[in-house]
Length: 395
Image (cartoon, rainbow, N blue to C red):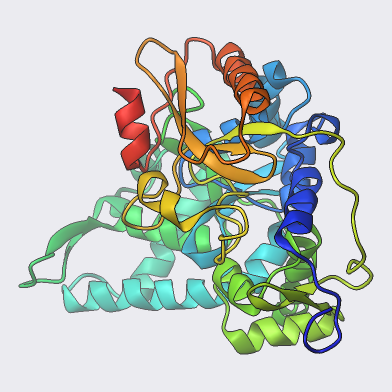
């Protein structure tokens, strides 16, 4: 029991929860990209390849990864790539658009628009009223086109090409274009989303698309709903985990925990929380499991406190200087190494922690590497945020 009489949940049970709820064991794998995104709440979308690799690692039939994910994102629009928590781009089930926007987007959007207006005023650029006119014109052009690049929108609305000097006289002085700053603000405001890429599924260049229509929700209610969904997948989690993942103030986290009636449990880190009725023991996965997860995968990045699944000694090799995780190798609920793709397409991996990872683990990891190689095929994937081990293995 925890110190306050709550039930204690140790690292082994947390790893058992992770295995099934994050669809990483063979029997828990999903049938579609929508099932994967729904199970995880959010897929990191800063690096477009992460979305596809995270889906492929969790599909029962990974051969359907690219076609299925592109269908969901660009045809059915059942998934949407948009700004969310921590000022970061994610892929969400479209049904969560309103929740994400109200719970995390509104406050950030207000700051970003104020910052843009202020920066333009300092540079002697046109004012906020002018900006609203350009915005309305650009959104109308995007609605007509359905999808468009910033350059295409600028042909319809030439004022998007207006430039202004940012941070004049500073060491980081630069020239900004209205289109790049304004479209970013519109994305955070939930008015536009990232659409089809200019190239393959690994491309970082993209078109913009109108955001799906959604109702305006009460921010506090939206925060409670987002936290409830995430905690059902990633609980137990500490207040620090929740504050880090959401990017909210601690008062907002506590208010949302109270609103959903979250239950306290004991963790090695202190007090953790689960959704109501989820404090009981869970069954162990049927057998040990292996997984090769991409950089920025939502499982590897899911918690601020990671010692229960990732030994601190491994972080220097697997994270970049900004705290972005690279490609990871998992064995039975723990990160045990990393992987990379070489220029010839070979998937290579290395164990960094061999404790508890014997011949069975190596056989399973080798099988996962082959599974990944088969569905990725001739596509070459280089993580957007490269880490020491990934660079070394890639050669």
